[in-house]
Length: 553
Image 1 (cartoon, rainbow, N blue to C red):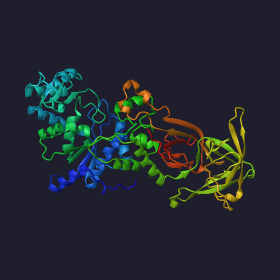
Image 2: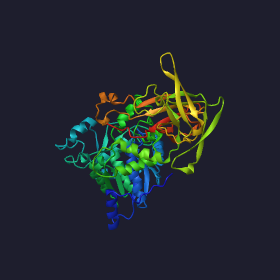
Image 3: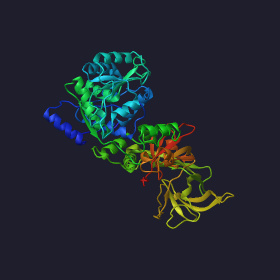
Image 4: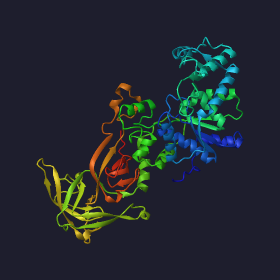
C-alpha cells in the first residue's frame, strides 16, 4: 500500500482546527467515519472517508470507524463487511471499529434523563398526524395533545414500550423542544421508536431503537470525538446535534463542521435509485463496474490512489458544485499510465498469414514490460507464420491518410517486423477473412537496416495468444443529471451501450496467469483489469478507461 501524505493537505476545516488548537479550545484531534450499514458505499462516501481519516492523520490524532446501526430493519452484516473492505482498500486504517448499538444502554439512559428533566415525552400521534402537527417552513407547528404528560406517565409508557407491550408505530418518544422553531428539526423530533426487529449485533434484546439524530451526537460525545465532520445536508441538524449534547451535560462537546458533498455528473448516488438498478437487474449488482459505488469502481480497475488524488483535486469547500466525471477518469488514467504493465490484445481479430515465413517455425520476440519502468524488465511473445491483427487495422480500399494495412502497404508490427499486405480472402458474403502478407526478416525489432520508414505501427497476437472475454464499459446514463430524471423516465436515461461484451478476443500469452484486479494497458485500446468472474477456462477483462478522454457531453 502506498504511503498517504497529509502535510500538504489544507482546507477550511483545517483552518478552523488550527485556530482552535492555538487557542486551546482542543488539545487533540479525533474524528470518525460513521456510515449506516444499510447499503454499499459510493464515491461520495469516499470523499467523507478521505476527509475524516486524513484530518486525523495530519494532526497525529485518531479516526474511528463507527457503524451507526440504529435501524435494524434496513441493515445487514453484509454491508458492515463491505464498508470495512472499502475503507481498507482506499488505504485507510481506523483506530477502533465501533457500533452505535454498543451504546444502546447508554442511549436508553440518556432518554430516561430527558424524560426526568421534562425534555422528552411519549406521543401517541400517528406518523401522518405528526406531519400535520409539525407545520411548514412558513407556519409554526402545534403541540401534540400528549406533550404535557407527567414525568411519571412518560416513564411508565416508555418502559412499557421497551417491554414490548405496544406494536410498531403505536407510540414514539419525542424530545420536547419548540414546535414554533424556524428550524423544522427542532420541532419536537422523535428520538425513539418501536421496532420489533432483530438486530444484527444485539439480537432480540431491544424492541425500541434510537433515531439517528439522537444516537449520532451522543455517540460522538461518548467516544471523545472533537470534530464531527459531515456533509452540508446536516447543517440544519447542527442545532439539534448540539441540543442533545448540552442536555446530557457533556463538558467537552464535539464540534460539527459541514462540507459540500461530492456530486458527479452522469452518476447516481441515491440509495433508493441504486437499489432499483440492482433489484430490477438493470446492472449486475452493487459492484457492477458502471456503478458509482466504491466496490464497483474497484472492480472496474480504478486504483485507490487515483480516487484519493481525485478527491484531493476536487478539494473541500462549502460551495455546491457538480464535478465532471472526466476529472476522475483523468486521475485514473494518469495513475495507470505510470504503473500499468503494457500488453497486446486484439479485440476483433482477423487472421494474417505471412506467406514467406518458414512453415512450422516460431520465435520469441522480447519486449519491455513498461516503457518508463526498466526495473520491470522484459517479456517474450511468440511470433509465427500465422498471427492476428485488429480488423479495423485493414481496409481493402483505404481512405485518405490511412496508414495501416491495405494491399501494397507496409506497416510495423509492434516489437517484431515490417510486413506488407499483398492480398486478402473473403467469404461468400464479401467479408474479409484472411490477410496474406510478407515480412522483411531484416527488420526484427521494428527497424529497417536501410533506414526506410513506415507510417503505421500496429499491435498483434501471436500463435500462443489466449482467448478472452472483454467487457467494454461506458457511463451508465446518457443524461448529465440522472438524479433529476422522474421515476417513470429513469430507465430511459440508461445508456444502452454502457456495456459491450466482446468474445474470442486474443491476448498475449505473457499475462495468461494474471490475477483478479491486475491492471494492464492494452496498447492502443485502453486500460483493462482482470474481472472477479475470470477463470482459467474463461478469462475476463474489464476496460477501466480509454487511453484518451471520451467523457464528452
